[in-house]
Length: 109
Image 1 (cartoon, rainbow, N blue to C red):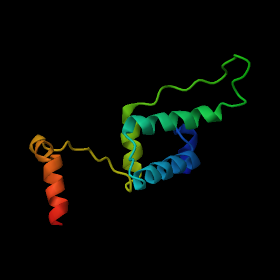
Image 2 (image 1 turned 135 degrees about the horizontal axis):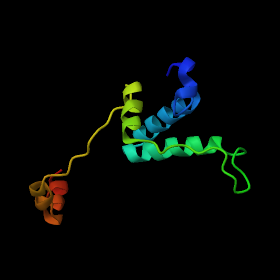
Image 3 (image 1 turned 90 degrees about the vertical axis):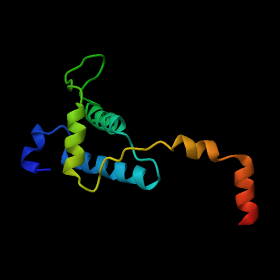
Image 4 (image 1 turned 60 degrees about the horizontal axis):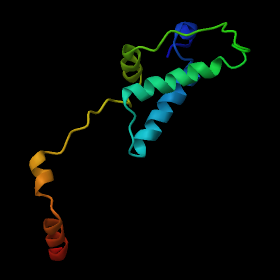
């Protein structure tokens, strides 16, 4: 992210780095976050900035909602992150996995 334009960005450089690191961490542990979760985490990062600004029921600062397009641009800015679409298991493969078939496989193995 260009630090000269940071004030115009949705997240600061540090926040964006933290978000990218969190996405990588979740992916490595086998739980890659869907785009809507990335958007929620970005929202929470922005909301954390408001602690001490908005108080006693008075809202001094309010942020616009984060768009779906922002998440796509975020992923594009971080090429190490990429969207992977999950695939369903073919119905015939699921149907053919029975207790007897698995037991036979392990007995022969």
